[in-house]
Amino acid sequence: MQRTSTEWTGKSTAAVARVGARRDDGRGALTWLAALILLAGFLAAIPLPGRAAIYTPPQGCRLDYTVQNRGCSVVQYYRCDADPKGDQRSATFGQEGLTHLSHIDDQTRWLESTDPQTGLQDVLEKGAADDASFDTLLNTGYDDFDFWTVSNTGERLRHVGFDELTGETVTIDGVTLEKTRFQLTTFSESGEVLIERKGQQFISRKMRRFYGGIEQQRDWTGQQLNTDDSPVLFSFPGEKGFGDTTPQFDCDQLMTGLLSSEDDA
Image 1 (tube, rainbow, N blue to C red):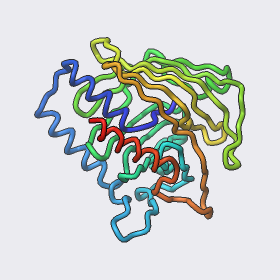
Image 2 (image 1 turned 90 degrees about the horizontal axis):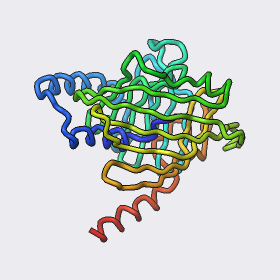
Image 3 (image 1 turned 180 degrees about the vertical axis):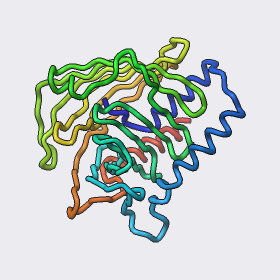
Image 4 (image 1 turned 45 degrees about the vertical axis):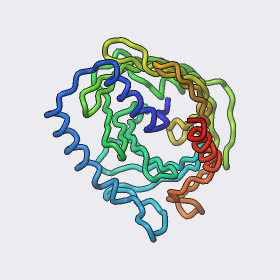
């Protein structure tokens, strides 16, 4: 299952703080510094005013392809020579610039997720009760999972759910994808439900990745959100749109929604 946005990452971590998770301010300062150092190479790739909005991956990495999604986001998918074989990374851009960095392994496990705007970073804890397995999903049509992540501010989150192939194959911009249905519940360390997500996503067997789709989210306050992050355009090396960091789809709708929310307030 794809972790679709840094907004959800930050929301989950903030939720833990609101339900009383303990923070160590001294340790937090050190981890924030470490996170900033790690992010330096990525932030250097953000286009500055006056420059073309074309993404350049960090040194030692190569950009494989770019995907324009619904929901006003564009994602750069790349690999780095220093990573283990099969690992993949992504950088997500919205209207406000770089919003999310992700690192997964060959089984699509969430090794690391980072919000470059806040410095929040979640990493996968070892020893999961049931690791996510892309091979299991491909071979059997179903994969469940139960694992923990820990943030650089000390919050631990438990993620429990499943991915299931629907049997439906679609072609989007010449790329063959298969539809999945998924369900995910994220718990605080004390066992309180923080975020519930369910819906439909896509996978590529060839590229061994999940892509966003249509989903419903509900948080611990009862707030609900419906999103559509489905892919629209795939751009490979030499093609128009490769490396483009400007999202193309649904951005006007997103701005209209934000203005309406401000008016209602």
